Image: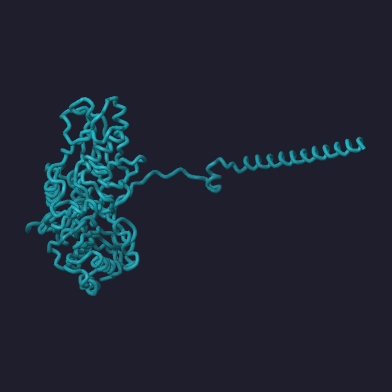
Length: 490
């Protein structure tokens, strides 16, 4: 019995060995097949990762040039009679309240329709068209604003010197409200690398002069998120929540920036005070804003009031005026006049259009857009004329080309910025075709931009409604622009 048990055990052991050998051989075969497959397929190569296709080298980067493509020469031109007939049913809408407007054929620089276009109206945020046009004319597109930290007059002091950049962010990841903004963390790193001990932060806002709130601004707009007092250094435009467009704003943006710098350096925020840098003080750190072209785009697409006011002060400095509300307004007006635009009827107290005391005629807003849309020149010899104070002024190709980027800074109907939620249900046929700057105050609404009509002609327009709440007047304005899109009004 014992012998039989040993034989049975040996037999079982031999069977187990054969099983493991078989499994081992099978594993070797599988591995060999896999290795052969890997050699053939080569999954580590770009060809495998892209579905077996050979990946070509990326093309050289191409910088697009903002341009409107003219309608074909054979396309019928819109006529005043055709435009008038098409607009008749929509421009009489009582929801428009006190209404003025103008429509221009950009190709021929011909006014196709107008209704009291010289009457000064509350422009609301369409005033940013003037600020943008003046910035394009007076400033280099790559201009950046510098925020510096310099040594103070006493041991342990560092002075945060605002240069006019409201886009600085204190977000740990550097991703604040404004794209490509300067980062507070870079200032902190440079200060620490300087080796200078710091126990006090002084905030210097002397880069700006005058009041921090404009005539016609409502103080409630600060906690409601439309504006912050205009000071020469801010964090995310003074927003308390840096990622929310209409976040409540701080009433002390510069001091708050100093407090956030102090906190990031490990200092007590109470060790922050207002003051001035000493002339010739050594620089400890500096950061630069995004270029002007990016800030203008953000200002227009999102109708950012703080950016409009700070860019207005850049224009003032460049043209020799004081960096204040009055200086910025005068600098914008002077720049546009020198370019040949007629500012009759324009009264401005800010560069953003937030003031209820601002007034602009639809004619001026449309003239700027129509000029920008004529980047290839108008008339014989590539020139057109505009009348200022009874004198003809040349409108050259160079002026039109300089203003052309304004067109690409406008929101797209149903898609971007302040037009994202419009033309989504009503007037859907104009979504993607209308590009315009919006303007909204409690007593005013405006829409200024351009559209391609059904025949491919570029029509510019300025539509201004006062004395109606925006929830009433905006649909009526959208209907007018939507009618222009669907018009083949020859």
